Length: 233
Ligand code: C5P
Image (cartoon, rainbow, N blue to C red; front, side, top):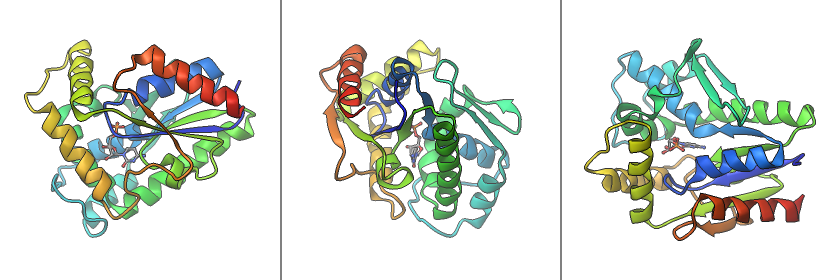
């Protein structure tokens, strides 16, 4: 069992969510998907009808977007068997994976005000788990660099763009969603936005262990992460 924090960062399509959640189950830990939080506040912005410039990586301005994001009432469950996000009491787990939210989320999460608010929330959730005597696996883009810089283990998952696009398509098909003709371009676009933004850009922490998942299946990645966690544990 894990008593501390494992940070799992990396771009989309690296199998991050599946492996981070699986690792939490194996380690008897809690699980926090921070991407789901950015997605949920993005859904709140879209529902409020506030226009989002999806190509923008500005870190300030857009006070109207930030105001809605900060006012959104999120409830996050950290049970790895049933991770859940509620927005104003409604389970939005499916809707936040849809293409509208996916297109807008990087622009919303580039805003410093939004990040500051959600990072505070994430640290509170981590602290609550540790206070309960439970470890937690936290997944995102800036966990090892910003949210929990003193995490016991930091993993940075990578995979080639082509492999990641194939995984995203398979995931959408399995979930009964339409696959998009431009998955690879969308992944490249989000990588670019996430890596180039001024506020907490996506990058591995200096002390992160990089794991290339291009040629590993989920079980292979999980076994590798579990080994790393047990070495640190
Ligand atoms: O991991 P997921 O694909 O659900 O994340 C959606 C988006 O949320 C990312 O593309 C990124 O723009 C943002 N994000 C972030 N910081 C995190 C987690 C997600 O900026 N810690």
